[in-house]
Each structure stands twice: as C-alpha cells, then as structure tokens.
Image (cartoon, rainbow, N blue to C red):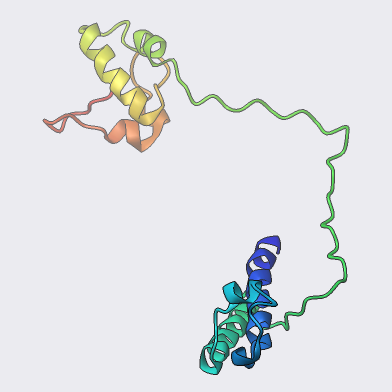
Amino acid sequence: MAQSMIIMFPLVLLLCNAKVWANPENENDAEYPFRQSLKVFPNEARRNLMQNIVTGLSKYLYKGHNFALTTAPIPAPEITLPPHHAPPLAPAPSHHLDCDGMCKHRCSLHSRQNVCWRACGTCCVRCKCVPPGTSGNRELCGTCYTNMTTHGNRPKCP
C-alpha cells in the first residue's frame, strides 16, 4: 500500500499541475518563477493524455476502486505476538551422513575392501543411504541404491 502511494502521489500532483495550466500565455513567469520548471504539458492534448494515463494507472493499482486522496488516517496492520510459553523448536534434521564410517563397516568383510569402499561411498553420497550389515539388505535403501549400475550394467552399490 505504501509503495503504491509513493507512486501515485507524484502522478496525482503532476495531474493537478497539468489541470491548473489551462492557459499558459496568461501566466506571469516573473512573478512565479517555479512554474517555468513545472510546465510539463503546455497543450490540451498532452494534458488529456496524461490524465488518461494517471486514471488508468490508478484503476490498475487499486483494482477498479475509486482513488481519492483523503486526510483519514490509514489503520495500522494488526501485529500478533507469539505466546511467551511457546515450545522450543526441534533441532533441524541433519542430512549429513557419515558415509566413510558406514561404508567401512559395510565393506569390512568384502574380499576387495578398497573397491567396495569407493563404490559404497559413491552410492552413499548419491542415494543418502547405506544398508545395515555387511551384505544384503539393499532394498532398505530404495530404488536409487538398488538400481544404480556400473558401465557394464552390473549392480554398483554393495
């Protein structure tokens, strides 16, 4: 609301100034030197164009409601404060897994531990899961873990 008032106030002032200058030849510029700088729309066609622009803009901003400058105060929005005895917030869930530790346990009985540990680490980072135990239970980590394959279409995750 305040932003639209900031936009509308100068436009309304400009419209009011344009309507005041009905006959620019009769003005005494020496008596009112500031009017020379305010002569934006000296002829009737430009004044009407500006009036149409301001009217259309005000209808757009106020969604068809009549816009009028009033001296009535604008009510302040109501602010509701949370109760003083609000329960403490739960700690944010940690999405970081200890992939190294979990994969070392998973690959501890594997015949090629380094190969297993490297593949398990990749699967852990991508799927955010390592099945419990040293073998099997792959279905507990879902389709990401079970469907990941090597370039030779063999199961990648141990």
